[in-house]
Image (cartoon, rainbow, N blue to C red; front, side, top):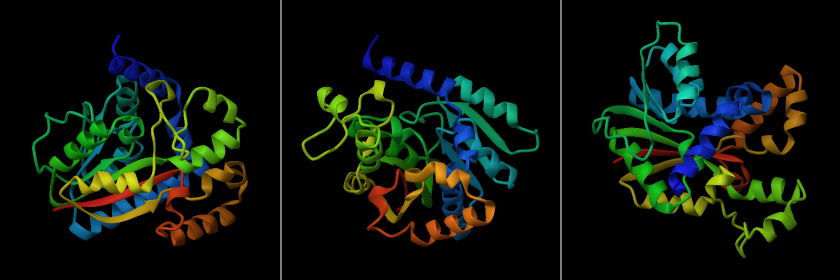
Length: 267
């Protein structure tokens, strides 16, 4: 079995057993969802978008919600388990096309086909710069000129803070040579997630014919205190979301967010 097959097996096993839908429905997960939806709809309003592509749609949390708003949605997902769950949620009234496919090869889709393209999961699991550039270039290729591409990333520093130190894993990660001298996490397919820094996101963007509109902290400080967030009453939680949205574009806070959302416009 080659490295790519191993990576696929690790991921498929993870998503077959992980309740991603439940995470996004928890209070702490809702912050990321609410934030991402806010910026998706900002882009929709800016260009009167009708056709939306989600690459790596998972079980359809975003794709189904957008389809039920009346948008023409195409959802591309790698794993059959997730596709089956997505299709099982459909009511039959949504304008949605569900395809099995890989973010690295969207040849089934034509150039300049979508007003907005969402790449909200695949970059979490691509370990080389070449793969990241390929996924990004494919997302841009199928987006029309002037359309938006929204790309989600997992950030490096929260992993160092919460996992390496917070869960007392320092000796383990040092023994396994999972950190560089400047404290960048080194990931392999078995680790499931690839961590990145803001300057690396900027470097990827510079290789593409896009304009960076915004880099947003999708959850900010939320995941540092999940238990507290989940225990909030609704009024307090609403205020937390209000605070988060007020500061999520502050560039001095971006790298400390567990997830970021890179908002690009195709030139």
